[in-house]
Length: 148
Image (cartoon, rainbow, N blue to C red):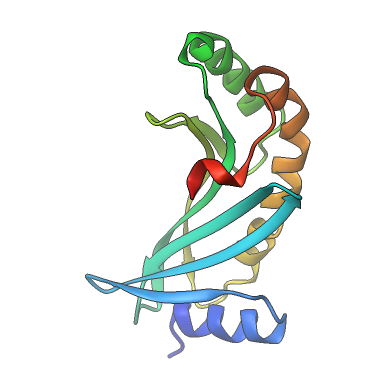
């Protein structure tokens, strides 16, 4: 039987997705894809799943959605995150990490028929673009240099 990883490998190759695949140990595989949103803003997809499984849980994270530079604005950002999660994040949930990074996350379960998960993946950058104006009004423009 075909595994989930084999199905993703085939689909990414067919669609010519510039993905990086890494074995991260403990039977897990990490896929990374970078999306350029603006000249100084790169969104990173990180997808983690079990290797050699016909069915597995998949963690999908879009990193570098934004960054809270001033923790005095934390309450305002959390209030905005709650509003955006109710109205604009679609498949995903927006989070504020302890270091100030804003990211989208989704957990799904899939078998070797990965097209529905792929369809969710390709919506991530569009969802982030829809959030940027609201987020940047509070946090300021994102700059990739924050994560170098």
